Image 1 (cartoon, rainbow, N blue to C red):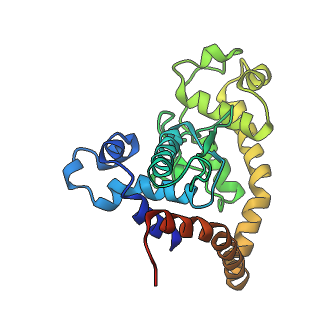
Image 2: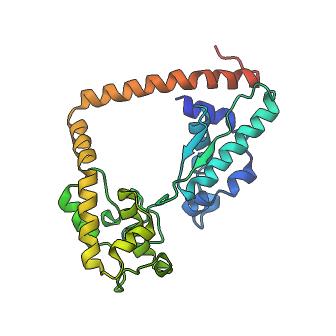
Image 3: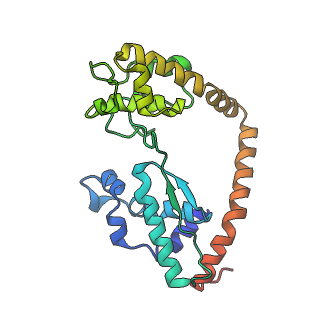
Length: 252
């Protein structure tokens, strides 16, 4: 509840112009921007509250989420300027941490679109609950082109699907795109896809097993969630109280 509560307080600091510039909101609203809900329009403020409530200093994000973190910084900076002193700011200004490789994983069906659980096609993504056969099937059916993999990264220009699969392989092995191409350059996807599929199956197996284990033990899952919620409250409550105090609002 503290997330929504802080969002309500920060709505007075956020500016319409800032929210109008949020590209993901524009994409989701499409041509019906005037018909979008207030909740969708103001959702970036809730995302900012998610970060600012816990005084985060660094936030791991993909390149597409950098704008949201910049908004959080703008809101935090304006709030501090308006309602706090330089030596006692209410909010920490968070910095983005963008991994150098595979910061944004793309769809298996469209190398120009982000991999997302909201995509209507199950074949577009790897789910943590997918079994080995499903993962292999999705990787083997992933969209690619007929050309073999190049030996240098420059050869992936204009080949979004190929770059995506190579980037995924690199992310799971800790290798750069250049290193992956050094290993598989000149080979076709008939050889590369099975290698990628086996890598994903092996890497995700412990996660998938733990996921299924927790799904079958609701009591243990509820206990984990309760511990996490308690820890979040301990960290977030002082920030929420400081926000109310800075605004001069009194709670009963």
